[in-house]
Amino acid sequence: MNAWLHLVKKEFRLGFPFLLTISIISIICTISAVYLGFKLENTLSLPTLVILIFLMVCHIFFLVFYVLNSLQRENSTLHLWLHSPFPSYVLLLAKITSGLLSLLISISIPAALSIVILTTNLSPISLDSFIAKESIWQVIWLTLGAVLLVMIMITVFIMFCWIIYRYLKQFLPSFFSLLIMIVGIFLLLNLYSLFTDTAFFDWLTGWGEITLAPIMVGMEFDFTQVGSDIDIRTVQPSLFLGDFLFDLLLIFCLFFITSWILDKKIEV
Image 1: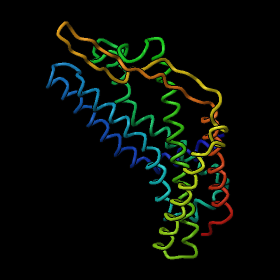
Image 2: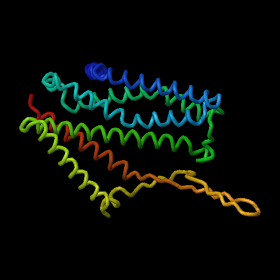
Image 3: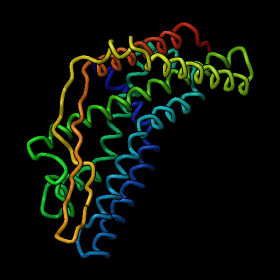
Image 4: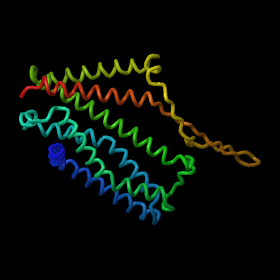
């Protein structure tokens, strides 16, 4: 356990410059959002909340770029990294763990301020207008879980691409390695897209439906001579456990293949 913690600390130090850069940008944007709110309306206004939410949405790509930056920095000492006593899956997991911790640090300030705004009378909008109050936290947690799953899936996919590129570089020049990798990934994604359009995929993933509370997605105003009518449009989103488990299985398989190639096929 101590060895694992030391490995995560080493990865954290390796990615610290990236974390510091993004954190500084995040803090500057947060301060600017607060300043803009008070400048426009003497309070934390809607522009403040929009900037903060946009900042958090941008963090969806934080883990991907953090891990990619960490892998690129390993290039100069790749022989030391691969000759570590740890198996490849542990080395890659350490990078993902360090990235998740760094993500938590970077997003904490805008996320905390957004929660304060949305859950107090500082909010320029009422969440009750969009979703039933008793379902707010259910939607928040399910959304966070889905976003985290997507982030990890994209990150593992980028790891896979990087490993394929490193493998091809053992036999081909960098340009041709990159070209073959891009073409191969493009074809692979197209095959996956075709697979997701099949009835078999729907049967495989379309079970375990979880229905959420209705969410308002828009309003229509109809003005007449005697008054006006407001038509509120809502949707009732649903999730499927089958989709969730399929994505987990896909992440596991892709991570296993990436670790195996790194262990068995990459030479330094």
